[in-house]
Length: 424
Image (tube, rainbow, N blue to C red):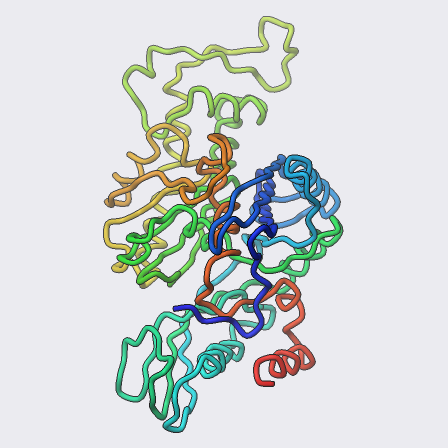
């Protein structure tokens, strides 16, 4: 299906520039790409920066977050030799929520047009999701025309009543305004917003997985996002408020070592599952508050102690994921197919642990359909940023919401403006 939204951002043309901005809890990443052919592009600039002022997907210090975003964008611009003004940004803050919504509109025996589809999808704006909720995505999952059901594309058909089954994603209006303001302070406009699990799934799932049904689990620093795709569409998103940073914190507390050393120990010696050999291997652990020049500044600890700390938290994360999937109502669509991505998925034996707890076939996913990403930037940690680029150039099957709309479509004047755009 190739439905155009009521007001969609402009699509880049051949030779044009598109930029993605991934604002995460542990890093901010900007990727700039140049369009080669319709639907394909080549990465020409990448910049990433340690995230400051952001915790658990929320901005807690505007100035610090602005500094991180500005540094990442500047590095990407320097590499690309281009200056950007518009970005496609991810949305992980504001607690995005999925809703199922059915819309019905009369077509009076006439031919169904794209305008009719837009009108049906625009009914999602009447969803009463909460006083501080803004619509981010409206994705058509299927249509019915009178008694005919299960229609993928009703255009050109005739009937009296058109029905649309929609997947609607909303998020907190306040969090969206905060993000947009922070990005604007870096002299950038958010052209469109994409919830993080949607972007990760686009980057990591292959076409057959999207069609047959699969879940994409992105374990980031501040939390884990989950997306379920079926019949080529995003049908559900969810989240678990646990991620790689929680593992690092556990190591820091359990081994009485500073956070920076805990992260280093995790990267060098960490594993999601224990091994008998871990008992025999000793590692040096810098201690909190000790003078690094003194002999007592480090402690010798069996590697098994570190691994047991990591395994306990990773097991908790996957048990939470299993529970969320079971209660989503869409578990049957996933079948046995799960794709694991995100920076924290790179810990050794994470896939094996996930398979054991989720009881599904699990593979590690990384961006596969993007030219120009090197080995470092083509890893699981950059899946969301890569997915934002793919979303920017794909033929949309959803009602797009621009960054401006995301903060202005509340209130009477905003609703009147949207009605005028959709109906005139």
